[in-house]
Amino acid sequence: MCGIIGYVGKKNNALDVIIEGLLRLEYRGYDSAGIAYVKDGLLNIEKEKGKIANLKEKLDFNDKSNLGIGHTRWATHGEPNYVNSHPHKVGKISIVHNGIIENYSELKEELIEKGYEFKSSTDTEVACALLDYIYSETNSIEQTIAIFREKARGAYALGIIVDDDYNHLYAVKKDSPLIIACGDNENYIASDVPAILKYTNKYIVLNDGEFAKISADKILVYDENADLRKVEVKEFKGDSNAVEKNGYDHFMLKEIYEQPEVIKATTLPYIEKGVDSLVDNMPDFSKYKKIDIVACGSAYHAGLVGKTLIEEFANVPVTVDIASEYRYKKLFLDEETLVIVVSQSGETADTLAALKIAKEHGSDTLGIINVVESSIARAAHQVLYTKAGAEIAVATTKAYSSQIALLSLIALNIANNKTMKQEEVLEVLKGIRALPTQMQSVLNEREHYKEIAEKIYDHDSIFFIGRDIDYALSMEGSLKLKEISYINSQAYAAGELKHGTISLIEEGTPVIALVTEEKIAEKTISNIKEVKARGAKVILVASENINISGDFYDELILVPDANKLIKPMLTVIPLQMLSYEIAKLRGCDIDKPKNLAKSVTVE
Image 1 (cartoon, rainbow, N blue to C red):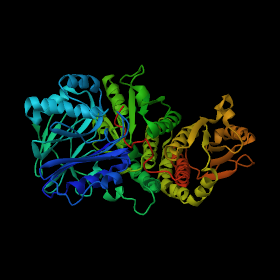
Image 2: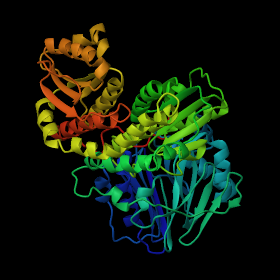
Image 3: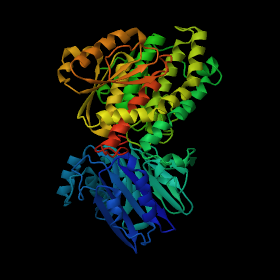
Image 4: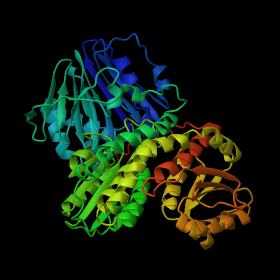
């Protein structure tokens, strides 16, 4: 959500750096873009509704500038338009902002009484005015930011330019991601590492409550007490090619095809030396009598898969909650409850808040996270990292699969020598080693997925059905389809159809049915026959070991048989591919769906 990039340097190429950075942050989702930069001693602001391409048309890239800030906005306060777009300038202060100032209404009233007038509907303009008012009183930007932190409630990451000081860029953060990147005679701020990888892979993590004063050759970081602290420069180890399409039409397609390697990288530390690796490289789960899994969106769906696997194989009760609900419900937490929070970005606001609440209740917390040094990674007691690399498409694919991989390994770890014999565990580990090859075989069926997509892409309503773990996977398949194709897609437990939903089935309605579990296959197939009898066009996704004889489906997708701990990572691939091919046929903006953001850092 919202991208921030800032530059200060001696090479006077602020425009190039900022626009390049914004383009690399497009995946976060946005509805407008803007830039503020210093040219010939004056601050220029340009912004535009819509794509960054619209902003680029207004800029002269021959302009030399040593200082600038840029922003891609995902609207929270006020509609997407020119006035509400960032940057905002009030008096001597210009800012870009990610997050939400929760008490902006009361601050706005106070500032109006002090003579300020507001043009936009945003909380950001209020934050800018507050900074300007404090600065007019203190004449010190360092004091201004320190006081601002006391007065502003909520989440924020700010890039700040002060008219009296065009040699420095200022930044402050609280509960919203922001890094400082270190270059050669130039330094940067960014809301995510990909924005600056073209220029440097060295960065400093800005912790909550801290702020920074940055020049071309010096970075000063002040802690939450406004005291200077020693900074640690980190080095991003990822491949900068991860933010390139590398010949694929879309990032989403590239990331779908990366899944075999991602699963290999994610699981290797826990399987390379057999059971010893599984035990030694994971936390000790033996003390926990209950597990809560908390997440949002696709990570929540991964949690539902994890619940099924942990309960079935490890015999430990698991609850799965949407983070925005978990934090407000009555919680039954104690030291024997483990709270697992799952987040690709590690910055999801509701999930982070749930983590903090769990810690306040005395429960241990475990983060399943893709981003090292993210807020959740730093806050959780323990962390297991997915090795998905940079995921650019808004609709997650490889990060979701790697989350399931780790939850499956947790189930196997707890089950080891408790509910499963060691030879059974070894057999599963053998299956995990073979999993990337099996995944590749499923990916190789793309032409088949295209053929099916061409038969159903023009429908406005599509249903997914399944039982047990297939129902959890159906929910993810349905979400993926609606995210990128805008089709009204719904997932239902197959046994619930007769309790009302079947009334929506009519002649030709596409129904994607999942049948991968032999013990309940007959029950699910009977439900499929019910929708088929009412005219549904059934696309059956079945495991190779299932008896599918009969005329109850129109199209068939087979996935290789595997242990239940492994099979979800195979079954989800056709659902991802169908969603992609359908969205492509409908001409949708697949990597950047409307109204969506990659990292949801507001509540």
